[in-house]
Length: 442
Image (tube, rainbow, N blue to C red; front, side, top):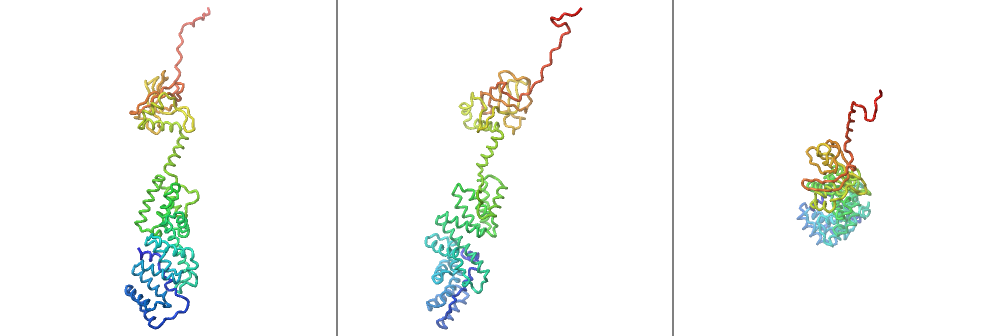
């Protein structure tokens, strides 16, 4: 992990290994010059450590002390010795507080080492602050190495500012100062929008606040949707985060492929959610649909609620305590309607019935149905009605069975609407004789 971090930032961060003081320096003697060159040109980093130690012990006040420390720094990088590397970086900064290479290692190793001790966080914070907020000093023109172009020097400044902000945000998050970390991470995303890890960190902090679930999902979508070659995640990590996003979004909002696609697109287009951004929960969507349904079809909505109560665990008790003897329907959610509606399944007798069975849910098929409601009349209806005929009624609940389900109403014929009008009976034939009371003319 240590060497991988070094490679991620690239060779730009090592340019200042050649930034030597502009002051004219002199070797103490020829022996110092030869020993230094022997040390610097040693190919084996393990042997080089011994030669550095010998040079430093013999020439502790050398005018080239910083240059020797830079060789020592590079050696510990090659040997993958982070503790020694950081100790050397601190020595260099004691001589030159703006040395970018030392600031880089102390900053980057803060997250890499995952050392949350107070002193380690403080060390990383001081270095990161210089990179994030004092870039004009650290990358002043007179500090640019001759081996680096102005364009490279500017890019190094931008890269180090991003590294500094990322590390500061991580330190603040580690200290549980989430508000401050959130502000730092958002500032970072404005400068570097493909920070997949930072987007995921924002998700982990914000998701703990129920009122900000939509915003949390925005950052999770960003972490999951940034291309893997830019996000900083491995392919396995990217897949894991993407799978988690799919599950989290569906659990919160419900299955919605188009909505998920739009959220991914938005998360990549903006660093932070736009003002007023909100993802509706599955429960909110369900309530909204229910309210729309109640407004568009209050009779059926009322019936479905009523049937839900009757088919529940306490259905019989609900009927006895609430429905039995009650006149239905009534008023529902501010919408008044005077009759329930259903379609004829059957009636008996076949003509002039006193009982009519209805199916209340229009989405169900009448064929093969035994119905849900029975209407009973004290005097028979005239004629008959075909299956599927739509009737509206109001009546008094007078009977209920849960299995098979059937709710019975006593209904007055005057409160039934939709029964087919029957053709009037033909008039009686007239007799051939003279009408009573009429005298024929002679």
